[in-house]
Image (cartoon, rainbow over all chains, first blue to last red; front, side, top):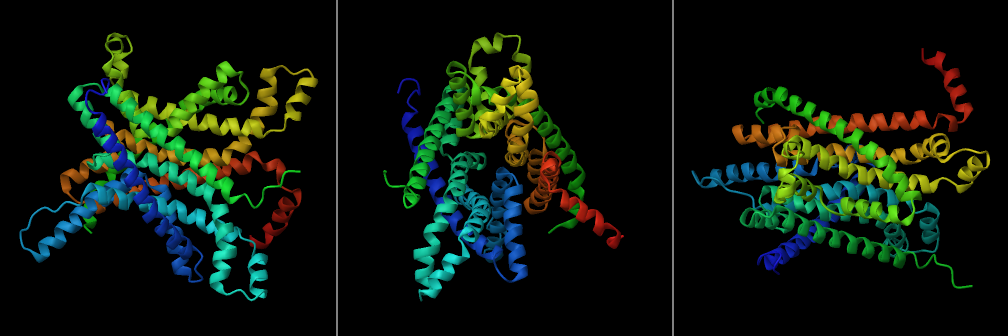
Length: 232
Length: 242
């Protein structure tokens, strides 16, 4: 790679880390999203308000600020905790990777909770009642009736949030993670060719988001195949 | 929690919020001005115009804003031609670069919303206008754009809020808006919770205001679609509350 002046391998490694961070945040974020959706639908008023508040805060606060809060806040909390146990231990830093994944998973969870709650409530009550009248147990009812429909309703929304999440992983470079964006910054400071490296990063991100958009469209098609008309 | 520190930092944070709102307002104005021709071109333009516009929209929607900000602020300086040009005194300014990138970014999203809205209007509307002898400019001004505005407004409300959050990235290129101010105070006081949470609360207030504004604009633009009965009902029940 002549254009990248030997940084090609580093950039490839950064891309891999970007994808790992994104997938990790997605998995943790889906857990927050499910908990958030369940909380929002809870009959307990306080729990429901907490669930709605969680989504509201995560959707109304800049992702960068959430990352900064988790990173610096986590570092202060961890330093205090360690120094309670070991006197004068000094400064303990939360690793940027963990802080970033935690922060982005919270943001994703805030958005996903809204999507999942909407999808859950979009499943017609009549279908559930029909299942009950057939004597299906709650587990069968969930996995055979509610979940397939819920996935169909939730996928477009979750897909959009997933694309945003991929792009938001670049923000973790601000607290010092050397993923695609962080490594591009490093390469820039050495080679003094900012345009080359930031454009390379941009094109890699573009490839990632475009392939994932295609992937989601394909999954949506798969989930909708029950609705498709047979060829006349 | 150190409450006195929280209160002490509020004036500086509010000043930062002012910068945020200022940046956001300019971004939205310039972004909308750019998005109008782009959105029309993306919806109805001929292929030689439409395809480059779609490429622009795809690039700005598919790459992280942080990369775009760095590409403009740091990247352009790589070319001697840019540094020698008369534009350099402006392109060197962080404030201008932040505004330029944010405007280009929101223009892509807004143009895409506008494109969807224009395509959602039944073609018969345009044909009817054409049949009654209207010129394209008049058709857009009187028939298509007013309806597209109403269709696109809910999505545009979300876009405004997401741009409000996006202004925080200006802090990465030295702009002292709300996040930048908060970050500086934290570096000095080392009290991340108090300062960042105050900043987050200010962001939430702005987001809340924007959401209210979008809802009010939506209600205003669709007032002809509200059933007349509802209005009467309101009128009738008014004395009871008074």
